Image 1 (cartoon, chains in turn cyan, yellow, purple, green):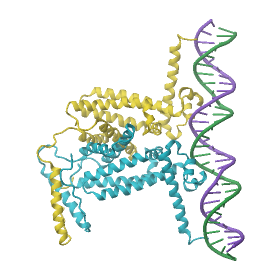
Image 2 (image 1 turned 135 degrees about the vertical axis):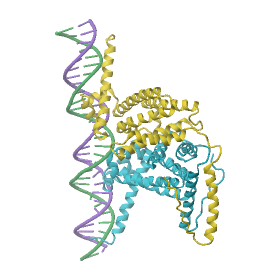
Image 3 (image 1 turned 120 degrees about the horizontal axis):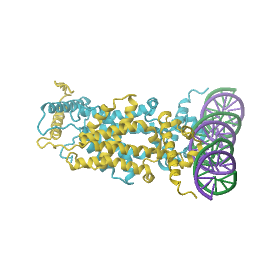
Length: 246
Length: 246
DNA sequence: TCCAAAAAATGAACTTGATTCATCTATACT
DNA sequence: AGTATAGATGAATCAAGTTCATTTTTTGGA
């Protein structure tokens, strides 16, 4: 009975698993959902059809796994993007840009994999759901951060903002793709964010000056600085000053 | 060759066509997409499987026709709702409410019918696309009306607002369904609209004091202080002052 | 190096659901 | 009533996912 070699054994299995997932995503991307048959995927991975079923219970599970991989990568990149910026607006722009472009790329796969589930209860049991939660948690973090700094209004639930953000973006991505083949992504996302941020950004409702609100904002800024200080290290504090906006 | 009776003949055909569509929507609604097989639909309409294909080219066409019917009804009701109110905010609320509840009901059908197309070019050729255009035209009208009255900002394209509105709403409807089975629709839609309308409503752009800019400058100053602090020791800045964040 | 057991891979057979088609039934008009 | 035509039927066909008996590869030990 083999025991010592089990590590390389497992590694091999996982490697092939990843290969199948990669093949799946590739087939979806450049053959389209219509032609993403198991046969085609197996062929793309240099396997017989039956072999795919040694690694995934059925097609649905395969697609879900592929989508999970997609979300895992997306989350990584989203976290990195948030780490790279400290201003809420910049962070949201980065998240929007990222989501927009990635979802645009792999929409057929996502739609096909999620379709059967979307508004169903059992979806909550899937791994993809868990990963999706982790993904949107990045957004939630940015928002909560913004609220505590007084930059974002506190009178609307984060969940609603989240839905407005991602729902709007996705709808937007789809109709952008429908409009023309080479949309000016940056500009379009910027327009969307104008609508969105204007909606959630806290601002003086009148022209005058709300002392309590200013205090709250200052408090937020100071807490932010404090956090950065506590992190110690070579804090490369991002300094988006000047007249940038508009 | 019959010629005079052709009217009743046609009527009979159209009646049966509508019956099949009704059966389709019913089956989707209360058996779910998984079990919405042609056999089940034919049975629900008291027909043999083959008969369905005398009325619709294939399943995809049948689903599209059902969705078209759905949009046609929705458009009627949307137009009525807009006619019934004259204030932009009230109109948008009505549209949102309508869209939210209807889409919630028939999401499985819509998703299944649209899935294969959504971001594809050929979708533009379908009847469903044309009807969708007519539907969103109602929204567009409300917006343009609002712009001309100065209630809605004119610096963002209507298309973007439309995407933000419907995309956000749909995402929102799905996650509402995911959360709990009996959501307080009215309240949730109201929250969504808070985010949305605050975003597109025109308002005095604070002629006096731009809080955001002030904060940004302050942030810069504090960063300077932080740098100096870093030179010394790691500051133990604890600043939890009064005024709950709310 | 060779062997037997275990693991992995294969592709033909099976299943399910959409679609077609040869056949049957109902209707309209003479 | 008789015939032509429209309408309906469901068994047969087709396509794609899934299973499984068989073959090939890998592994650890003699």
